[in-house]
Length: 150
Image 1 (cartoon, helix red, strand yellow):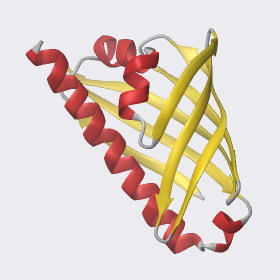
Image 2 (cartoon, helix red, strand yellow):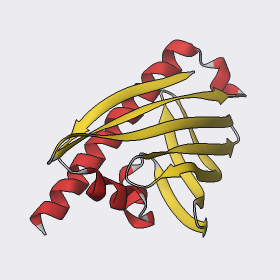
Image 3 (cartoon, helix red, strand yellow):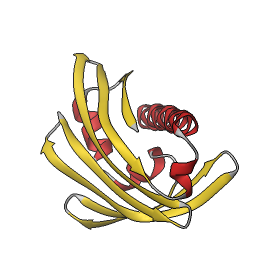
Image 4 (cartoon, helix red, strand yellow):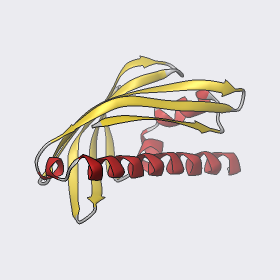
């Protein structure tokens, strides 16, 4: 399954970078995370609670950041396992300055799913991926607003 998109937010790359490198902030903005624990400089153990139509599951696994270029981007590698299937993904995330107060977040990658998840079909998985992407950016915007208000 291909994961690709872009979204412009009202923040400079330095602010976004700080947020994306902070475990507490990540746990607030990544949809479905119920637990995120730092296990190394750029690695985390995670628990995700995801509901996809009539199917829901708790996923446990690892998140790792590779190819890190400070305030420019990184590759996020995800390995998650559950009783309804497994998911592996690699997503390149780039922070592209638009102007002094805005940054475009671009992502491009792919995910492979197995088990019951894979049997759900591309159309359902694609709509779930779109929904999770929208939730991520809505959560990011809300967290940015919280920081501006503080």
